[in-house]
Amino acid sequence: MQDSLHLYFDGLSHPLRLTGCADLTDDFPTLFPYRDYREGEHDDDPVILIQLEAGKYHLSTSWLDNTVSYTDKVDVLCDLIAKLAVARSFTDLEALYLHAAAVEMNGRVVVFPSQYRAGKSFLTACLLAKGHRYVGDDIVPLALDSCKVRSPGVSPRLRLPLPDTTDETSRQFIERHTALAGKRYAYLELEPELMVDSSELLDMGAFVLLEREKGAQAHLEELPVATVFQQLIKQNFAREVDGSRILSTLTQAVSNAQCIKLRYDRADEAVSLLTDHFASWPSQANILEFESGSPGLLSNVPGANAPEANVLEASSDECFIRDERVQKIRIEGENFLASSDGKAIYHLNQVGSGIWELLSEPTSKELIISTLETAFPGTEKSIIDQDVTTILDRFQSTQLISHWLNTQHNMSYKHK
Image (cartoon, rainbow, N blue to C red; front, top):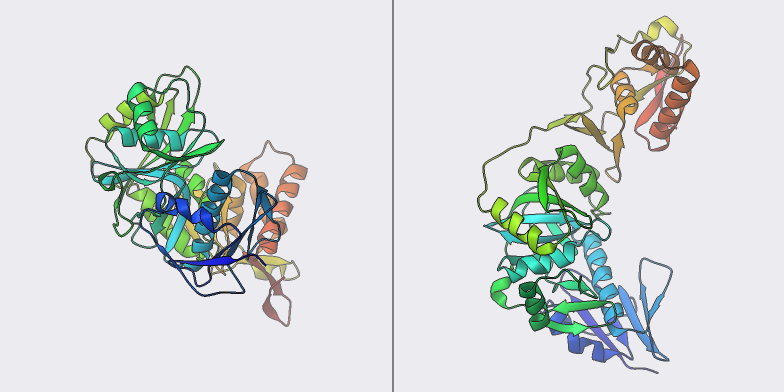
């Protein structure tokens, strides 16, 4: 039987178990510079298990059924770091874990939400080469309610090979700090002065969405807050955190931050542009509206106001009403809902937003359809009927609305 090593990481009640591969810990000081783990006693229920057999590392977790196998040591360590972040998100109910990179610039944090092959990790390394402090390159914890940013305490990772356009300063910095490299990834070991300590809490400064395009000259443009808000909802993993707290925290975060898109090709040009742009931090506040089950007019439907719903006039009609416990946030004309149980967040399109406002009072499907016919006179009734049916079905299946049964002798709510 192979010997096993059990390592307990801060914030996790169950350990990482290494079976037949305890030598992986030789690289832990590089990967986890704050040494937030300790060796402990045997545990039959490890949160993550890595076992070495026949030259392959097999990684499994307590929350997934499948096992993933690797031959490259750096690859399995990379997956381990990702799984540790997910495990911590299950138990850390005071933070949102954003899939993003981040650096400190002039006293505040600039966050680069994850977008496929946009170069966030490489750009982060190039910013470090210019003296900006490192927060994270893949995971960024955001404290709930206060919206302060902290470091996850993991060293930066780069995808290999480096781009051909890498400037000499960045290339030398990366080569000098590379402490662990595999076929696809490399990890950097940084001096303490280049790292934000894991105990520090920093103010949010900006969210920058990256768009990498070959040959593009680096430039910045302001983004709608709602665009960034949607991206952050997609890129956070906080399965155990109440949805209303997620909405509230992200609302506060984007309201206090600049929201920008960076289009670029060369990282050195992007670094210069970002450094100049964030040389100072102007005071700002984006205007957001927070609602909780509040009535209102039909939003986002041009030329239409919500008529008063007279349920008693059509007492035999099947009516619906929205759940008063559902919370809504409106950002620059975009609406987001947090389910009554706090476990899901939904983005409403134009028609969905209008229907949601109509459902502030008991309203029948027929009345909703007739209202939208008035609002969109050029649209065929069959299309409106189909859209209304789809949206009401979605609202019911996610328990955002309830049936309102109104008969001559009885009126009651009935959840489907």
